[in-house]
Length: 100
Length: 382
Image (cartoon, rainbow over all chains, first blue to last red; front, top):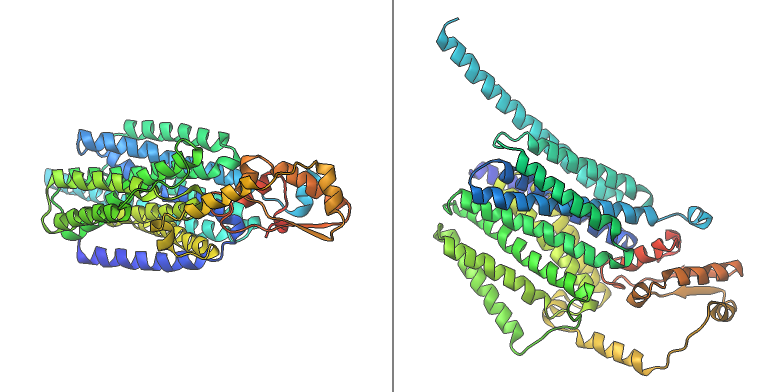
């Protein structure tokens, strides 16, 4: 890793942290559980790293670890998004909730 | 055209393809990052939340498609097998888990995610044979330590919430000192590895200690304090992902990980503020004694069983009724009964509202979801 890439990575980190603070603090307590399960799904982005590790054929150990990592993070991503969707479907406005 | 020219053209072609690939991948990551942010922004209101999540899902798909173009990938078989297994397990978990068991589900799923981050870190270490620059080693160490301790911490949280082990705090003499010593040793090895890289056994000792530390961290925490730990571990897992981003110089990992890390951090601070306690108090105070005392008090009081009609008649004399649900409501599956009661009351012209404490339930906002399941409109939830 060169110094330039490190510095640009730090920039990205700092800006993302700032943005995260701004965005997350606007989420009402009502939606905290969906928020948690959504960020949970998004943190499964380590799938991206796992995919390269699993497919790149560095060594057998790497591939095995990679495949397990892919399976684990896919579980995280798919499970997280499915459950968030299911939860959000239940939040209804008054009139709609009444009809059921 | 002579042979030299043909070679030259070939080299240029390969080079161009590589550049195109890199641009395509980076573009898909940029798109994914933007979509993640928009998705989380959508969560600021229930009406926009669903669309926001669809954006985030699309973003994830883009990131995966982009990654599959990566030039280092030589075989897709293993990737597809991993994706298939993960999708099936994740889908099963997502579809069949009842709303009241949401905290456990999130804990388990998060354990998987953190484990993946730790594994990627370990395999990166293998790939470089342990000889890494200090900066890289630093990021990689953070990644595996945070990933490992989140994995076991989450698993124990899952076991506690699911009732597989006792939910009460497990404490013993000198616990804090022992934990701190263990942490100090882990950090010590970590610093040594940054200065003198390359030692496999030390690296694995560090990973092992981090796994153990995760267990020790959650052990003294009672079920009632789980919301704080849940969001704190959420934060750690996010930071582990961000550290992976530093190791792989992958911007989307840094962005998504940081977003997750901060959301967990903000949530845990909110939870602590709502309980009038500091984070250190929750983590190291083994404060569960207060929770047990509360439960004992309940047992001493006499329980009165009331029918729906009785209580409705009594409450109907009021103008406004506010329900204050707790975790008991979720375990007893009483949310539908409460909803029926509210219906009866509303028919008699009583204003019904729900007052929900920020840490009610076993994870942030848990009671809101449980009540929403019983068709309580979100406008009545406070």
